[in-house]
Length: 72
Image 1 (spheres, rainbow, N blue to C red):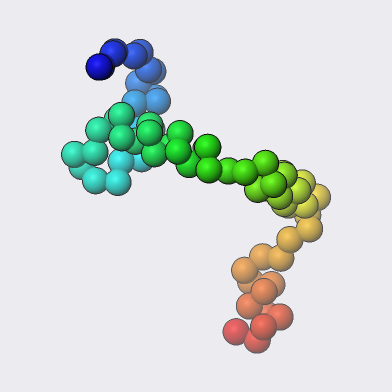
Image 2: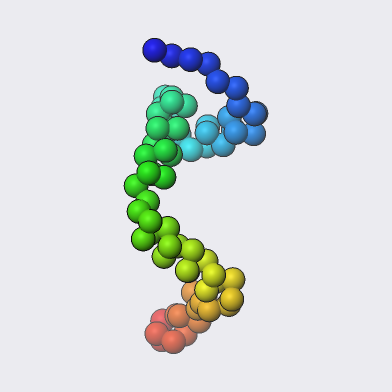
């Protein structure tokens, strides 16, 4: 069974960019995005929130800093 949905041109363009291959349908793209969202456990979501707070607080090391510390 199929149905028609309305999306903005901006969202359509986003979905177009998310395609893994040229003939992938928008339905397949949306299914993949939904599946990815459902796979995030509550623990993973909490860990992501913690890391985002740390980044906003400036608690991170840049690539350049890491390379310098590692002598690369």
